[in-house]
Image (cartoon, rainbow, N blue to C red; front, side, top):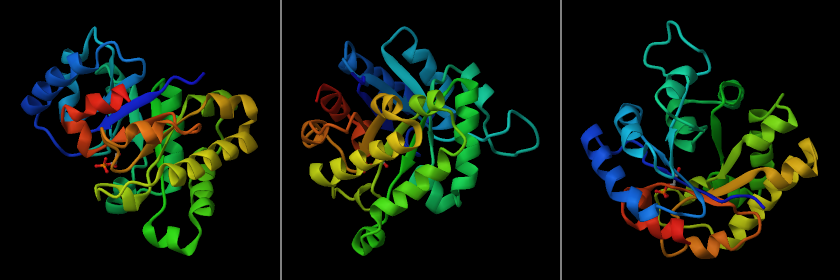
Length: 247
Ligand code: 13P
């Protein structure tokens, strides 16, 4: 049985003092959860939020990371820095990073490999645009993204990756994919992992849905066999996040 994983992606929200206050508010609401619970916070909030999460059931995640350990890479943050600050998870390849900051699959493959080698759990995002969905190339596009991003990984490494399916048209729009639409893609992702790494890895890998997931629709989405969790944006900044965890 795969353990479910509900992660909040706070995106570029919450100053350090606001982040500490939000973490303190949410921690008691998700205590004792059956799922893995993760807060993926802005880089500047990592150190103060790590203090709040110490000794709780909530894991700490970053929203990005560079693939080199150190050096002349102004503005970047490395895996050893994240680890030393108490981070366990790192979101990689969110559509906002791909779209606004030009991250491509070659770069993401390096980041995924580095995160795994360092002992971090990557939450690797994939997902199609509305145009791609309407053209009927959703599954082809996601297969290409994931085959590129996971290239060169061993089966053991692939099993440690959390894959987040986030249709771009559903992010921040209030327009959730139907549970059948989400299941279709998450099932295809698991089939791809089976094709690349075998049955055992495909059964182990955890696949999240993300895109306007909230307290009201989480239970229905999570009832689908290949949806093992959620990556939550807007609703992760409110006490509503606890409803998703409960679902
Ligand atoms: P929303 O939940 O705000 O749609 O964001 C989803 C997302 O991008 C999580 O990474």
